[in-house]
Length: 543
Image (cartoon, rainbow, N blue to C red; front, side, top):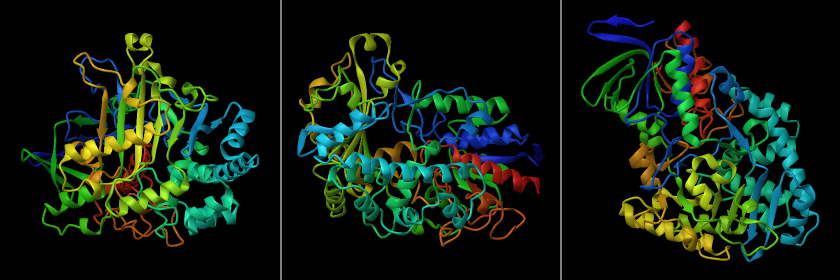
């Protein structure tokens, strides 16, 4: 499938960028007998889905950027023969009441009565647990209807709506701002916040935002696996990337690192920073659409980047602790509270107030945040000495920290301000300052780091630190939801419903497809962008 073209080699597919989606695409295409070349700018593949040891002399291997798995279908794991282990968390979440942190809601999948009791203690309403459970059951029906479609050509919206079978819920998620559904479904500000956070991870919006970007984010966060559960990758996120890399190489794909692409030609040729040119029948883009625009415009085309809405809205803090911090809530063991998602200052009122503060140019106070402890579920990411000492990792994901707050500022100063806001927010619900339990490296350095949207942009090439590479799209066609889907990417000009559109991976250029988080069903550690692009590419190449 590889043939000579003058002094060059013509590949079936060249993939720009070596993130986890690119590796999925490479593995599928190579398994099908196609010649595949992956070009990665960094010295390693994996993009944001990697594990690293950030503190010298400390044997802790953390998932530095992406950290949980929700949307990775079992079919991709089977198709590619991936040897990975994902562990389900028994504890869904713990949410202390910001006004009275002595009480909190612990949602424990293994203890329904204990969960109901915690709802009653924290909200003063014995019926709130039942209301929350009823909403979860309704959303579960959406997950079961939508998730199986993600590895198939895009379905029609009407067919998905029929499969969901709950028109009122469909309208609440798809047609009206999510805040309306949340307020109609549960009664307390605290529990409303628990529901709403799934719509705001990496997404800058209010609960009643007319754009419905919070609704689309919510949908992707509650459908994973058909259950909405978020799983912990054993060995860290790098174990997922390692398995994908091995699958791609085993299938025959060629992976090149330290290979920066500076130009992508719409006719299928890419140029590297050292001047080397590589030709392909199709180019798959694992970089974001805004980055692809720049690469294509370097070939002389007018850039479309001005039309791209990209802005990350988060800060991530990685920590290693000597032990878990004490809680003000004596009814809950810290090991349970931190095993799931620990919500900090995320009532619905606080979330909307934080959005308003950030929109006006200020770091929110308090900063809404979500925390979890990987090492409680998977101790293998820590060396034996750390485990015997009782050390634990802690990952904090701060919401409503949009890129505009750090744009044009000194990276170190802005990072320090965001870290201070995150620590202050966390301390407000703990029984002791988090600083008191931070582990220190042999040189005395605290094992703590903050990663802002600037860091994502500078280190990983994500425009504006946007983890989704742009606004999320509905995972179906029709009912005006195919806006932004681009034009057909089939080399045969197959019309508005050609392979690239049907699989949600089209760009303006017939020989260039999206295969990363910017694909229609991209986002998260899912492999969907890669799988969908591979399916479209095989259809096109077979023609």
